[in-house]
Length: 467
Image (cartoon, rainbow, N blue to C red; front, top):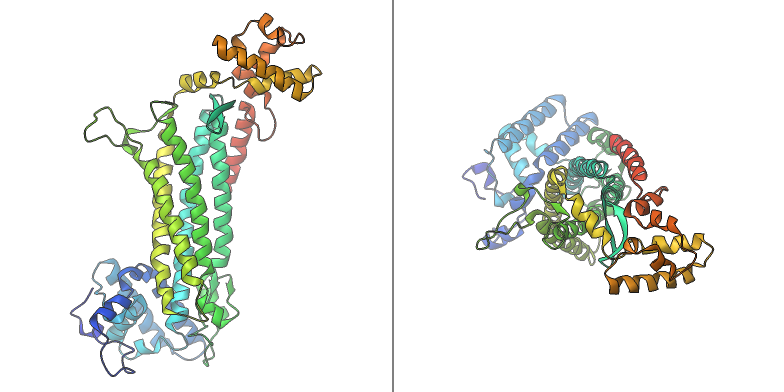
């Protein structure tokens, strides 16, 4: 990433050294290859810093005007692909400062008054992460909206509910979709909570001890939209808790998407056939023409591991660092950036895919009839007749054993057969042994009954409207 522009060839901080940096070391220690993505935040922070310096009398209005115009030109150059990045300038901060000095002269060298790259990069990362959280939240909302739409559409659709991946009790497909909505709702809450700690201004901490200049940190915070200011300069430049917390939130979010992916992969298989994924989210096989592979959920499931890895990388990065800033911290950006890219991509894919999923209702219904999914309903029925639950449990177990031998579901057994296990069973039992009766009986807040699903959908829509 070298350039022919002379203004970028000389290091701004080279006067201390008696020899040039080794070429390999120069490339090895540079971060411009990846941190250039924070150019908007770096320019935003520099403009706010310049305005603060003008407010306290360190810069005059003409110098501020030159700095603002120069930084605006640099941003335009970057966005037009005309900026020549230089490894010699190491990072995004020094590249922009070098270009600014080339454009406006000595005034460009005044911009760094009262700050260090240590508090500058800490500010840039917080600004960047705040912006990314604000982009991730709408994607989460879009995915949740798709789940709610699917839940509303399939509020009456019956499917088997599982424990241990064994048929347990019948549930509605809509109820199952709303379980994923609840998981994502917690992820949204965690992101909002994380954002509060991200939104803290470290600028003014300088290298580690603060600065002798009469800076106004409250004014800078106001200009940049920060809610609070770091209260210890050592912590201000070295803290990366916010990045670790964000990555932890993302790891949990990806875990949820991975669990969802696993079910989509199972449900779209020939063995389940519960759903059909849209063709545009699947691929075929190079040699098996019948294949339709659920690539998107499989890949999201796989990408979860890299976010887990990034969380461990950041925790390990910070575990042995003394105060304050160390070069180790340069390694925080690549895992953080990749976490952002992975989460945003995964959410976009799922949000696009969700409304187009087709549920095969006849197949889910038939699957719910297998495995004696209304056995618990029969036990509850017997409790209503005055038996203890443990006695009821044993009686139903005997009925299930008979059904396994005879190939009959409980709802298919004649009344006389059921009465052979307990003479208190009467013909009203068949009202609770049907799949429809089973799900309708779970008619309470949080239950799977169709009317409860619709009520939950209405509540979810309110939550989504509130953002």
